[in-house]
Each structure stands twice: as structure tokens, then as C-alpha cells.
Length: 143
Image (cartoon, rainbow, N blue to C red; front, side, top):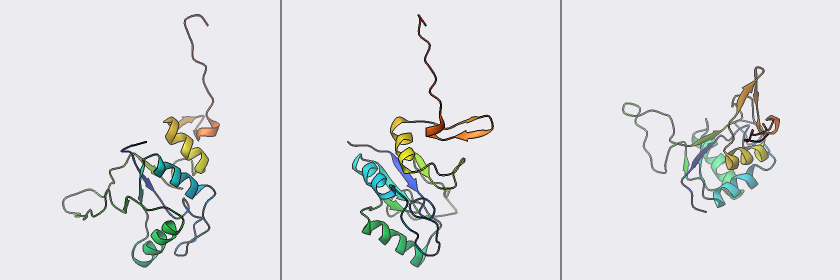
């Protein structure tokens, strides 16, 4: 399946347990989900605070686990950031980060959210993740 959607993915606390500057244990289903998304044509961008040696270690850890990124800390491979002429914001469709509103829902739910185009909503002052969303019955002409 070809696709042009781009997903920015954080490393510490998202792909792996947070152990910065070390590398934590891989999160359950992180690499399986990322591989599946790549196989479906999504372009993955590693978007992390890491730089230099710690960034190289994170990229290598992901490579050893079967993930090659479309780009790292940039919108596309080879992008040269010029702070005088451009914004630091990435050109992506989704950001996956453990510091999202409502926290990190888990990789199974992340996959479902992307596949089903589910949006979060606030209900009773709480940001509801995919598994907590109540399905609303559609009203037809005769019910």
C-alpha cells in the first residue's frame, strides 16, 4: 500500500522506556507497530531531543530492531535547518510522543488511532484515549 503520510516519533518514553542519556528497554509492541506502519507506506521520522552521540545510539538501536527512518530530526533526509528562514516545526501528519495530552496510550491504540483516523476528545475534563471512547449510536430515519 502506497501512502504519503508522515509520522514523527519520539524516542525516550515512546519507543523505549525513558533512561536518557542511556537507552531504555523497548516499549511493548513499539517496533512491531513501527514496522507495520512502514510496511503500509507510512514515512517515519525520528523526532527527539537527542543529538550527537546519544542520537547516533538511538538511530542505531532502532536500526538493529528493524527500523530505518525516512528522516531524523528533520522533515526530510538532507534538510538543512536555517533558523533565520524557517520554522523548527516538522512537516508531518502525526506526532507520537509520551508527552501528548492525556499521556501515551500504548502502541496498540496508536495503531488503531492512525488506521481508523480517530480523534481524541475531552469529556468531563478528561482527554479520552481510543479505548475509552464510547461508541455513539448513529440515528437513522426509522430509529
